[in-house]
Image (cartoon, rainbow, N blue to C red; front, top):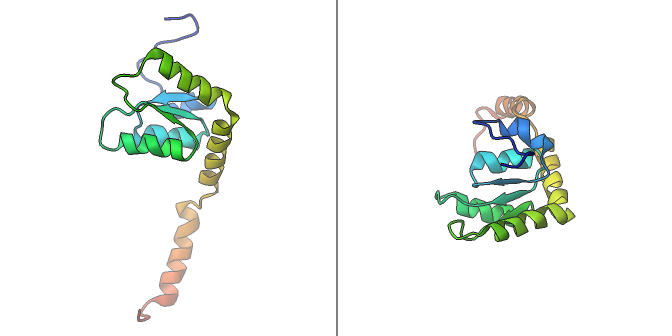
Length: 128
């Protein structure tokens, strides 16, 4: 293990991602969403679970990262090339930051519930 790498049993992505320029992961929902919430570009190696392959494609379609087509056959050189591209091309970081901003602008439940309660009260008993 290189001197600048520390091996740990567990670390919360929410604690780690603010210090990351990019993240490489297996494409789980929590990993993708947490990276988006922090505006961090991603390289996804789908782990074979039914939902990780389409999610990896979505990461590419949204422009927030790249994915590996066949993680069982990926070479270190291919993975490195994808990571370097995500780090070197500003569009990935820019798009990840834009998605983060969009997520932060989304109303919270405490913003929405009063509106829903008001609408329910106003239209209670109103025929469809």
